[in-house]
Length: 345
Image 1 (cartoon, rainbow, N blue to C red):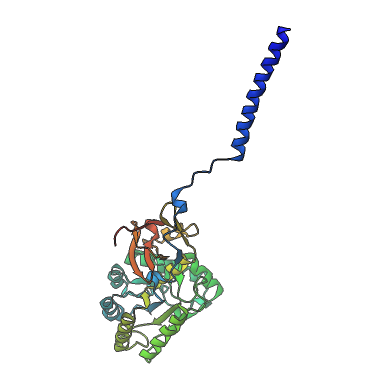
Image 2: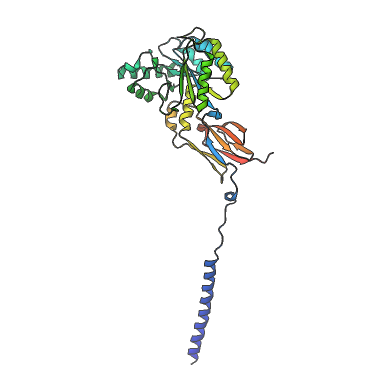
């Protein structure tokens, strides 16, 4: 009899313990603890919007001025005038010219030296072998005598053909006439001896309306080259562009490279790490390395109502206005930079 009471007592105790455990388990299931949240995820982002500028430093439009045929006005008049206004331009040279050595100094000063073939023949009707000879020999000669790898090719006589254009892009990155990645509404205007200041301005105004590129193609000034532009017209035009401050007037290489990279990158802001990040996974760095390109510029726009501190070795220039930060960077030095709220008034 005692054994029976003992067994019943043990069962009673075990039942109470199981009920307590079940009650505790039920409470845990019905009242879960709230997960810990990262404080930074609760904060309002200091940057409201990010975007890639259409042109470097957020200029409204771009201008490329190009001068063909390796005549003496290039280094005697044109380069010094462009230098005096702080602008750079492009000289297209046929490498058979005995004047080629004179362009080495212009390249060192930041001007672009483009290939205009070896002998300035009509390559649109030439054989494949002749086209390849003109392309390869002209490129190799510029490398040897001027010390730079040319990236732009300028078609002699402005003549094109399907095979010629295809082969051109096997050896060069950019072209004045053919560029599938250029804006469809980009303009090309010839410069001749009767070109007026008003016609040059008209070209820029049309480019400004569409925020696009206008290419001016000439030969020389001061009596040099075919149909040279009057020197006074060029000086008046460069002064106008400088005073207007809306156009990025630079080499054809620069505008073409920026345009191509701009179409390949995206920008975003990582609020948890305070980092502006550029997705450059589609940029062909290997190809650009083959041409010994030493700088790949891109400009990002950051919209913020906060005062920001922007830091990074790749930042070349920062401008601020209308609650926007215009930040120009060199992608070869990095594809991200820090953006934090400034503690300074």
